[in-house]
Picture 1 (spheres, one colour):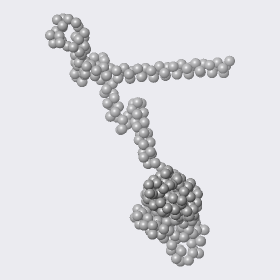
Picture 2 (cartoon, helix red, strand yellow; picture 1 turned 90 degrees about the vertical axis):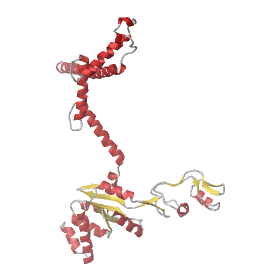
Picture 3 (cartoon, one colour; picture 1 turned 120 degrees about the vertical axis):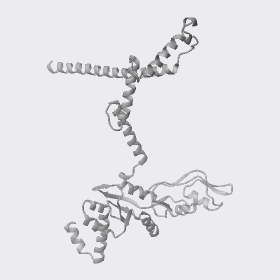
Picture 4 (cartoon, helix red, strand yellow; picture 1 turned 90 degrees about the horizontal axis):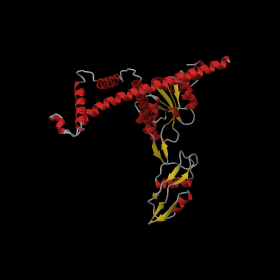
Length: 350
């Protein structure tokens, strides 16, 4: 607590010192402290919001001057919130992280009617459709505020979506009456977070307004990319070891099949490959009498066994081709670098 803050607090009446002390206790009790705008929220609705937030989150409303004194008394960086103390505000404390707090406050907002003289928080649109109002002077009121309306089939209907007020414009008496008649509630009522201080960092609402699903997808894509890089670079980790082992096993098997290496692990595949090759050759012989009895009725090779062997060979060939191509590219790059280096030395020394 600064000397200046202590001096100001000492000059306060007793009830104000007690209020500041209670506010200080609230501020020091939570990991995250924020300032919320409560302007325009009816008292009953504010009390309901406070009850819904409790016990994970506490809302404290007091005089702005006392809120400022409490923040300054705590210090430790939280006093920076004082610049957001203006108008009708309150302090909100929670042990949740700021992102969870912001999401909770946004989810707690509810639609509400807008009054004459208020500023539109967004474009106000009267949607196309039947208003449910019987023919009468209301059709003129709709047209007067800018809605495309007419009497059709014994009812007043809006013939197309009509933007009757743009964001930032003031609501007129006529428009407020029309919206009330139609039951349109164009604004949301709730606690607007102005700023929150947590673990030495000040967060603005813009910092906290993130698309969680998109963020999760980005993290998943980054993890997949890292895994792919690890596998291709043959860099073993706890997450890629099994994949690298499976890949190495497949490559070793492919080499063994191509080289016809005698091994208990390859015996069945080598026999199947040889059988498929023999049957393929037998199918090409026109004179059945020239073939052993077991191969005289062969019409086509055993495709499954030969395809499996071919796939193993193709995989190995492809990997070898890729390796050779990379090596050639590397050699070309080295040659280019040497030529460039020679030109540079030539230019340097004439």
